[in-house]
Structures are given as C-alpha cells and as structure tokens.
Length: 130
Image (cartoon, rainbow, N blue to C red):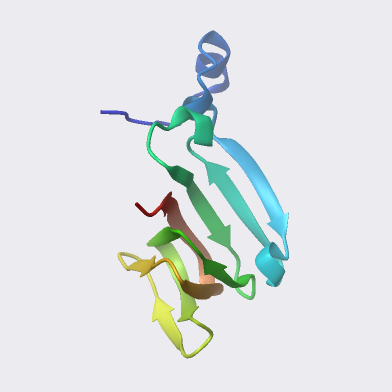
C-alpha cells in the first residue's frame, strides 16, 4: 500500500523521495490542443513495477484542450475531480464530463478533452495492455 500526501518544503528536504516530490510540468498545445495543461506527476515511470506510463493530475482552464491522439498498446483512464469539460472519442461527438465521472480510452482508440467551466481537474493513468 502506497499513500502519497502533499509534503511541506521542510518535510521534502528531510526525505527527498521521488513520489513525494510531485513533479510539476506545464505543456503548451499538448498533443496539438489549445492553451496549456498543467501536470502534477505523482510517480516517475521508473518507480513503478507495473507497466504504467503516467499517474498524474491534469488541470485545464476553460478553452484549454488536449488534442486528438491515439493510444496503441495502452489504455488511458481519466477520473474527473473538479470542474467541467468535454471529451470526444475518435473525434466523433463531444460528451460532457464533470466531478465523479471516469472515462476509459482503450487501446486502438483516440480521444481529445477540453475544459469548459471552472478549472477541469482530472487524475490520469496510462498503462500498457498485456
């Protein structure tokens, strides 16, 4: 069992454990989208024994988006924590998403997501398929 909690600067200096540092990143026009996506990585890929590529919090302001992109040999799960947005699978129709919603994009499919109301906050997990 692993529990990740926010650390104060003092606690981080005493024990610099990668997963507790929560690496922060900002990507402009992510996957050809608009605006920027703020990312807080909970774990580094090398810290995980299972084939997970990403475990992170994603934040999108209204109008910001992640462009349409495929997943091959991996699946992506979004769990919406706050705000509202829309997601489209394979570029077909936009579906509203909000707090408590979870989405799964299976291998061989593509998706795009955009923030619409308030700051869209999602937990994202990408893992390889067996």
